[in-house]
Length: 462
Image (cartoon, rainbow, N blue to C red):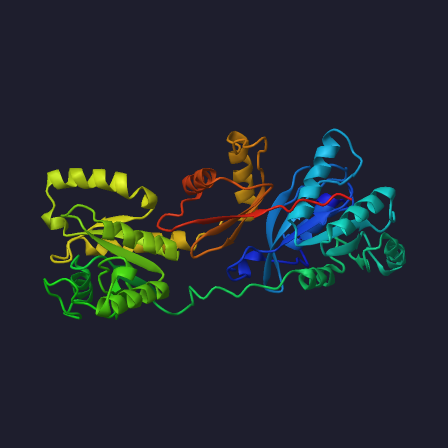
């Protein structure tokens, strides 16, 4: 059987069954000299045929990232090309990619062909791995039966600990190998607390005083659930209400109008603002009401920024639309373009809480925002997109240096969080460019996006 005929039985991991993490998934780099079965082992880990496999060396050349899981733990697998430390030309570029993968990895899975034994190239790679100070799991591949296990004992000479015997082609020993990888991974981050099955989705109604939050809640509830008065600031405490809308139940929270900066509030207003922030922290999506009949105020912009900074999904509801004439609509469009450029991705709904006009359109906006908030992009697709993006528009050269993005991974959702593994610091403008293109390619409507960097540590030269 050739390596291209890898079977899908005895698969190892199914990444889709793992809950969302709040930290970047750890990285496992699979390295070794050419044609030792690295890509076959990667396919075995993934439980599907993703990496290209052929019976000739040198098929894999770039670092390729995939999502994987084992024992309920999610991680990123980096498949690399054959590593030949003293290579030249194309082979040298492939080896450089493997070195970058080691730099970015939390654990290195070093694959050696047990039927051949430790070659000079294996020993040179092992020397580099020892100097890297990274945890290394030494993998003796192509051990198809117990008779071949004695060959693997000779790999102790590499000085990387006990060789674990596997047959990537047939799956033999692969479970024990993945257990060892998990043992070497850094401590797992706590799981997400959002999206608990069975409970209604939580929506916070925010806005400055007298913008119509309580009127909207009463209209949605079909009763006078909360006190409404023309005097601004009537609501002081968050009010929870289960409401049937669009064929499902939602938990709406009416909050106190935010008058001014928190540090400028006093007395009851100060505590009302704190309770509003707490209600936002407990919510999944914020519906920010804006008085469409008046010019956008600094308070409106500050509340929207507060939602974005909190990482909650966002819907903009322009209330009192029944009071808006053609002239006001013209100026409102100009205000939105000029002042809400940082929230162009938020769904917009024009409503009237007083008359009930178009309040049912809140549901599609909320559903869109929640879907974007929980969107996850597969690592392989993400890195294919990033490679094309960076090739078309690389980071500018600054001070004679040009930072590169080695690879990217989505660290979590709610909101979507991306980590870029880089060779240097990426300027804020370039990160905004990446965010803009991510939205163009994958959507993420109604949600903020967080982009952080993990900069490669410089290797010490001895």
